[in-house]
Amino acid sequence: MQNGYVESFNGRFRDECLNANWFVNMVDAKEKIERWRKEYNGERPHSSLDYRTPAEFAKTCSELTSRMAATPPEPPVEFSGSHGGARGQGFATPRKTGAPLPAARRRAGETLATGGSGGMA
Image (cartoon, rainbow, N blue to C red):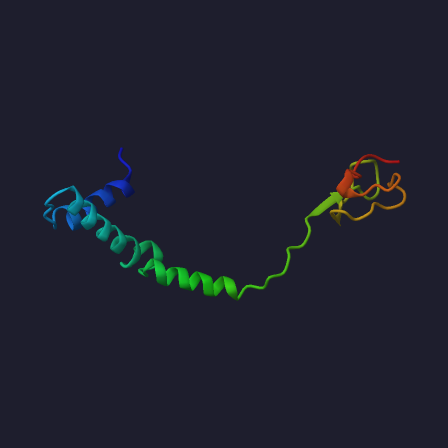
């Protein structure tokens, strides 16, 4: 089975460029093919871009991203310990990375970021 995208492009290139032009020599062929490539990639609407040109699509994307707030993401939440019952049973409590462990589980200066999610003290 052949790649459908490549076969589609090859057919379009053949129909729109190679069959539509008469090439005198290699320099002429390179110039005409380059002109067609620039038009194909930059000036014609593409169905994958909702029938917009790449320049229009890029402008829309940059407008959308410039309106997004530049706030840093929340630190990841890690789960530590359990409540009630035997060890490993019950509900885990969320804790942000780098937060100190409760005094009952903390060893000297230990935090989640330094691997403090270990066993009971």
